[in-house]
Amino acid sequence: MRKIFLFVLVLSFVLGCTNGRGMRVTIKPTLDRRLKEVQPMSLHAGLFIEPSLRNFSQEEWQADMIAGIHHYVFQIGEPLAKSVEEMATKVFSKVTILKEMPCPETIEKSGIEKVLILKLNTSKLELIVEESVWRAIGKHYLSIQVSFLDKNLNKIFEDELAVEGKNLDLIDYETEGGWWKTSGPKYGPAVEDSIEKIVFKLAQRLIESEGQIVNK
Image 1: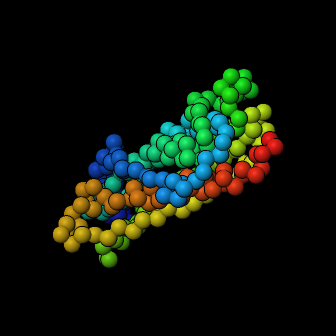
Image 2 (image 1 turned 60 degrees about the vertical axis):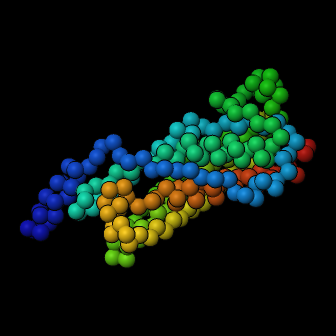
């Protein structure tokens, strides 16, 4: 009982040392190189990314009994949205970014032929530090809901795409572990990996649908 009380006391002290603002994790995904070889579909697509996905930010905390609580902020939505927009310009000959859910009037006025709508389903992070072997492991489980519609807003397809991003970060002997206590493990690449995978998976799904849209 005394040990439990001591643990709670130490944990309370550690929680009190938390930096409320959090450390922003840098996330800079890149497009899969294979998209450079894609022949764009000759059509005008409207792209609507729901605000909840575009502005999505995820916060994670990690307890360290010595250094306190590490508070990380992963701004996932913005780099994901930008990557999807860039990918769309490779897959379609013309892309219009829509700021709101499209209606028939908007579609007809803009000359849009197809509509792509994206929603966030799940985003789960696993942040693991194995100090005994001096390594950090980041995993990011990401899934999105995708709807591809014709100009009359009839569904061509609707799918859930899911991926798992991973990153293993080994410590540099010269730092002697110091940077883990100040800036934390480099978890950003795990998120970058998931974004890169899901954007390429979406591109593949759109390219596969080309046969379905001929008479739509």
